[in-house]
Amino acid sequence: MKVPVKTPNVTIVGGGFFGCSIALMLQKRGMFPLVVEAEDELLMRASRVNQARVHGGYHYPRSLMTAYRSRHNYERFRSMYREAIVDRFTKVYGVSRRFSKVTANQFEVFMKRIGAPLAQAPSRITRIFDSHLTEAVWVAEECAFDCSLLRERCRRDLDEAGIPIRYGTTVKSALQCSDGSAIVQLSDGSELPATLVINATYSGLNVLTSGSGLEPIPLKQELAEMALVELPAELDGLSVTMMCGPFFSFMPYPSRKLTTLSHVRYTPHLQWLEKPGETIVDPYERFSLLRKESHFEYMVSDASRYIPALRQARYCDSIWEVKTLLPQTEVDDGRPILFRRDPAFPAIIHVMGGKIDNIFDVEDEIDGILQSNR
Ligand SMILES: Cc1cc2nc3c(=O)[nH]c(=O)nc-3n(C[C@H](O)[C@H](O)[C@H](O)COP(=O)(O)OP(=O)(O)OC[C@H]3O[C@@H](n4cnc5c(N)ncnc54)[C@H](O)[C@@H]3O)c2cc1C
Image (cartoon, rainbow, N blue to C red; front, side):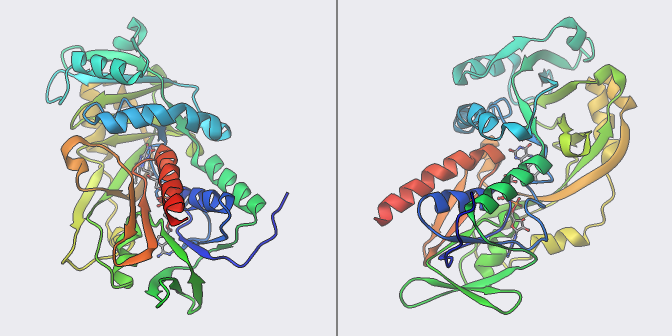
């Protein structure tokens, strides 16, 4: 049943998975949000171009908090978005003998600690690995999501909730009024009054802070490539992630019915930091200027040392996006959420989830903020 539209009092900047989900959360808590999205469709940027992994904790053996939260959120995400979940594949994790930041034993102990199921891989799987380079291989419990189906779900939920969306419109800035509320300025020249502005623009977080004359949030930006391949028959139905360091991963990419191949060393083409005192360059602009010459050959050459059959993977295409990280992730590769009320402009909240299942952590923060406002 459609809910009648009331005059919006909250502007959500960004119609990615986080912006859409936050709009729904606020609406359920009695507010009237409006979503403003620069693209002509929802979930077209990072929420579409990613590795599609619903993290089960295995990827973060150096960050207890991220691994633990992933495990905690995993089943919840699976059941809440079940129509977008793809799990008809075997998820395999391996630990490299060389250059790995964890040993096989440490990996096993850690997964036990966070309650992540791990079983010794059967020989039909271990035999695809080069045993000189690979210390251990396990079957894990981890699934993927189909971004097209997630988009359909978000679109339907917003529609049923009666939440309006302004497509093809960019928020340029927000001005602070004397009563603490905001005037949001749009690319079409119009303005929206708002008591609350959620900056859910991911890579664009600081384009909005700098447009509004606010201090930038320290962020690391990365122009990332994932190759899309067809796996050889020998690897059909498998997905492998090699831990923990400069290694590779291949995961189903359900919306294209292909597999992404990514590599810690070759997926990033360009990286830079955004920090206070420096001019902010629009990451999307930088992205559009990048000469997109694939690193697939480097990726596959290195990965096939561990799994020789990968050499037969057929390159089909590459998908590219700006990946945004909090600088502290350099230390332990963790993916905490950013949830920050702007100190100079409290009507703006900046939100960034380092991974898709972090949405539940955002929900906890929103409840905290609404309670403190009462
Ligand atoms: C290469 C890569 C691999 C990843 N792999 C995984 C993975 O396997 N699993 C996982 O859980 N996570 C992964 N992530 C992270 C995950 O994709 C993000 O955490 C998530 O998509 C962020 O959602 P979002 O809504 O914040 O961002 P987005 O989906 O990027 O949404 C932000 C939206 O804001 C819009 N926008 C920006 N500026 C403005 C403006 N000024 N006005 C109006 N609209 C604006 C953009 O058009 C965009 O639609 C990966 C990310 C990348 C880039």
